[in-house]
Length: 238
Image (cartoon, rainbow, N blue to C red):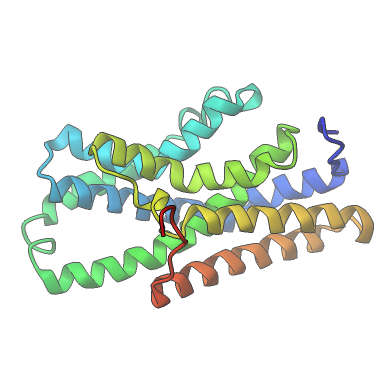
């Protein structure tokens, strides 16, 4: 039981962890990591960084948010996830190597770059959905207060991008009207609401799978609609 009385039955948490640890969800997580790493590499290429700089700018959006989350949560999240599973950094290394090889061909073509950006938007949205669920799972397993679930969902999704912008000494778009971390936070709230209802409707594994699947679809579709419609959140001073 968390400090504010928010409670999930042990069976709900066990089923949640089981789903998040399944191979199909793991692959969604890796796909999102790949997309975030490519986005970081493109920024490194645009700003003419060296190879180490390219690695850092690829790693920050890919694993920076989750690492920052694990450092803050501590407990069973120490050491952070990147030390327990090297696959994430292998992906970053692969993106840097392949990106360097194709930097003077594919990235030099405006038309191909536009197609790459569309694919990245799609993969990034998959990652956003998966990272949202992981952020909620970390908060609940750590038995934090309920409001940490949407916060950690947003941190997992947007934290790495914000760190990247700090390195680039630029203002972060996600803090100036881009609807990104808000989508993750709302998805996190919906998921903890559905999981709380599991205390009432039952702890069945299929219900937990359905709840996670619903949130994945909700976050995915919401983000795609936002990109397509060019929607933005209101900012101060307007």
